[in-house]
Picture 1: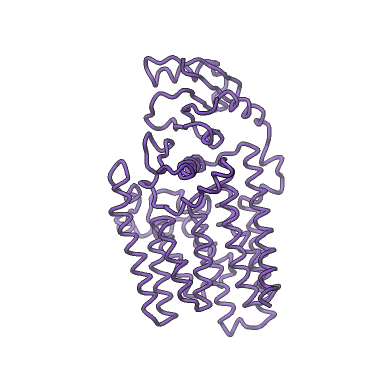
Picture 2: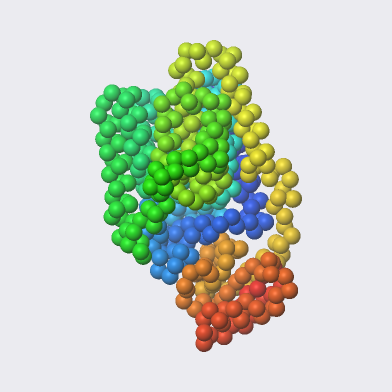
Length: 446
């Protein structure tokens, strides 16, 4: 049974990796750049691959990215980037990490619930909206947290306390807020194992959260502070508790329960979602409240493993037919919800990943030689960071060798407009246009 479960879970994971990678490839070849984050993390990977600290010019001249978020685990990107120096490599690595978590979750489900029910749960997890949004958002550090959470919680359910402790303890090196998640995992472990090991894990998580937010991040941040502390508006919540019931927040919570057909509510493991939901809902930034972007990816292994826990432990749910019905329901829910999230785009790739600007993008990129410095907008920065030093237009930057901008939203713009604007930003420097069409303009410093 063990070998059979592993082979079937491996098949589910392989299929997930294919779907994730197909989506990423369609994004890449259609020159879709979701944000500046892929460019930022590519600059980090390039530095680590060349044994340098992560000085990321997209965040600012001389900016050490370890002063933004605490994610030393990203040094593991170095060998992959060294072999395949491309921003696309990071997308493949993320898809691989998410697929590993699919194997872990599906394997547990198959072992505990049987082949069909377990496979349905594995597929439901693979297609869960949190993972879809993470793939769509392109690379972020949470890619490492997802398999670590899966491995830790599976070990916890199987009462492999040492393994659960080790996997969970590594989360503090993925992102500073995950120290609080580790704190709750430790409490759940202490309750289930009836040993002090869980309490030590909780202390480890809290200790690293305090150390990173009060010492490490401020020491490396240009503003000598934890850059995201101001986003935790506890006073605002206390003043107006009704903000906790903002529609996007309520929808996110309801969908977390819905994707497991409510089963996650019958397991104490679901408490592990609270720290992540807390920092997101305390923020005044609406981008944190909903289901888009990568923020919910770390919640997916928690609620699905909690659902498996409930199905395998609750006697009222022990009937084989009922389990099969619930497992199938979860898979159907995931497939139906896919029509509302990122993978819906796979139904019509020609429409959702158009190649209409591909020739223009390639020609504009070809106008920028290797090894130069470039100031640009978000448009194609992920395609420039591998071979140039890239600065973002929104920062105060040194004079670049080239400027590169998407002008498609400014019809009728003169072919020399971007060069002239660069001269205004950098007085005393002359720029000459080297490429211009209806979509992009590129200018070179004379």
